[in-house]
Image 1 (cartoon, rainbow, N blue to C red):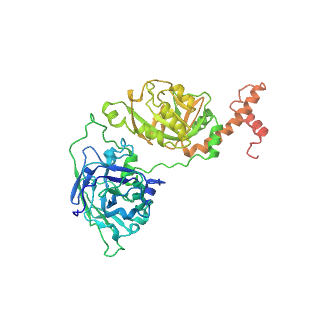
Image 2 (cartoon, one colour):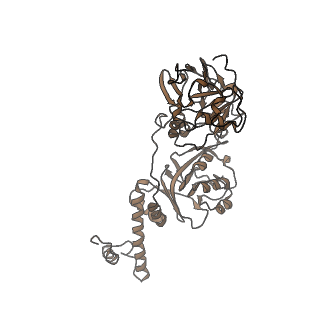
Image 3 (tube, rainbow, N blue to C red):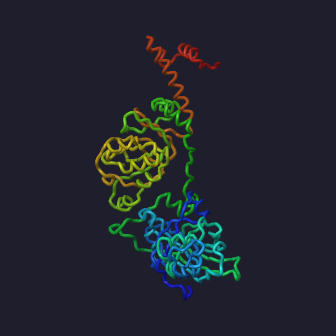
Length: 489
């Protein structure tokens, strides 16, 4: 790196800033948000970065780095670029295995030694148009990222002006301005190169290629000192860039319940729906052993699944604390979804309490179904969130369970539940309906309700049930004649 580049006092990085990356992640921020990286994370071109022992998801991120040249405090958008001294390349390396407990701070996942290589050359900011810079990244010689600042959601000058509202940007401070689509996982032996240039400017100034080689570490993290690395399919998808790149099967995408289908399922009793499922060969649709906390509850929604595994000390140390799978499920539940929890039928500890029930209610969840227990049982009922469970239990989660994964196929009360399955519950219990059968089953159950109501009228009028329930040929002819439901009607 050139001599004019010194160790920065502050490194500030932005979470999402390129439209291509935001589209890849499926979320676009309304305003920039940031995190700090330690100065000890700075590396130089030609250096190495270690993938720690016991981890798998080290990812590169090619970025444009801004080096502050003049102090900036409450500067205007129009004046902000004048406070940028230089532009160079950066690699905002991150270890997704450590994201779960960082809660967005990225202290551990982005703060490792060598996780912020910069350089090798500095471009004078006065010689380039901040709207016409380009960033590219290669892995083992293959081009992986190629985007320009024309694709930014937030212009570079806006980042400088925004940050200067909150604290003074000092000479030598570095702003990492985000990465475009194409960031992915790298493994020991890979060589990553990042270049920033201004191809349309006089002389096409360039940072040169910033080169970093990945090595394998051999010192594991100590569970007695802090949480251990942990990954799930969400982290794998975000680290690799897609489920396909991560080697995961495609997500089962199920259309949301239409208002019409939801209304039918709310009207149809669970017993009638289950009878129709059994007629179609589905005999394992019951979530056994659960009852509603609010008498008279009727629930309909699509399943969002949460899996607990049996308690084990080391696994709870790595997965039980921080932003664990349980908290992620309740934070991410969508309106109309039912959180379905696999607790292996163990009712001797709680699987949720009043705080998480409040969160689910605020998010618009339709209900929670768990084959375990519920803490703060009365308070949860007062919140108004229907919960079907095995009943109350005062114990905390960690007595029997480790929160393990979300949005995976689970078992609850003896029934297999997949994300997107349709969950229906009432006083008779809870059933699971495959989405492809839901419309057909709902229509058949409602038709059966009309038939059963007519049969009940005949029984009330004094007719014996033999031949009437179920209808024999003679009684069916009378029913179809009375209701106009015959084949020729």
